Amino acid sequence: MTARVKAWQCVGCGRIESQEQCLGICSDVPVEIVSAADYEAVRAEADGLRLFLKQIVVSLPRDGGWQRSYRALQERAKRLLG
Picture 1 (tube, rainbow, N blue to C red):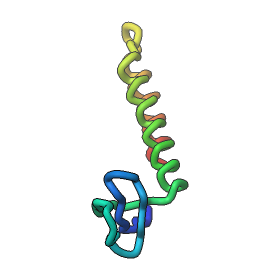
Picture 2: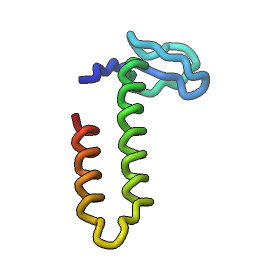
Picture 3: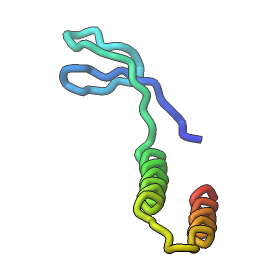
Picture 4: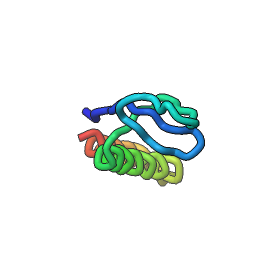
């Protein structure tokens, strides 16, 4: 599971503080931050799913071949789901 860290981010300059809200002239809003490794893992999974959906959209089975195509898509979906 991806760990989230609560922090404050300035809407003007983008500065991020994790302890408490700035007392200066910045205008801070609460944000949640995840690690870059966790983000990249989720993004890679989403990219794989996007490619799978694209394959479904552009695939057109030949006459009488829909069952074989459907089974192939099921196998690929199983692999994507782990």
